[in-house]
Length: 255
Image (cartoon, rainbow, N blue to C red):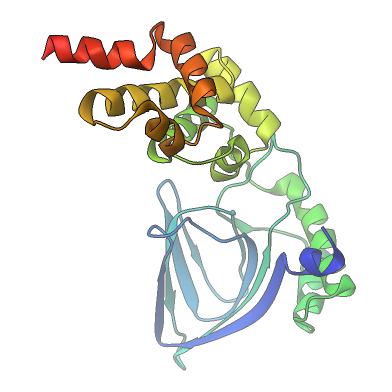
């Protein structure tokens, strides 16, 4: 990652709205990054599947990357909604930790770091440094979300079942864990690696296509993004114990 790419992972902005404002991140891939925000005027309610928080003037709050949520923003007596938003992509923590939607409680000294950052909302070494200093001060007191291995494994399988083209790193990104963590989760949940589960799922998809369509083995192999039809046949035989043509032939006899 070069300097420009690194700086592009941050987006600092002061938002101003009037009377009422609504966002719906349930219909998207969720929050596009991690957010530290501070309410300056007005109030807001943020609601995820598992939690709701209400923030008012002066409150600092955190929104996790990828969180599916709705936000409702209300103006103050002058119909003003003003808040600072600091978006970033990389959290200075290991993959064994994650944090839930929450309000941030911090000392006046720590809050002053955020206030001084708000004086200059451009993205540069100084403001990025202040953000990470602030995070370093609050992390120990933030509410962690326990890593639910079964939930992550199930979400990963859902992703695999609904996509015909992906890499394991795509699944890990979707589940908000590292690729190495995903391997550990799969071994605990299924006794198989993500690659093995991917191959098993794709063989199930291939069996359905062999039975319900007239696509050739080569066409099915290409559709499911196997590197070659010979490799597809090898993997298919490993997981089903049969060749693709045997599966198609047996299906015809059963009809």
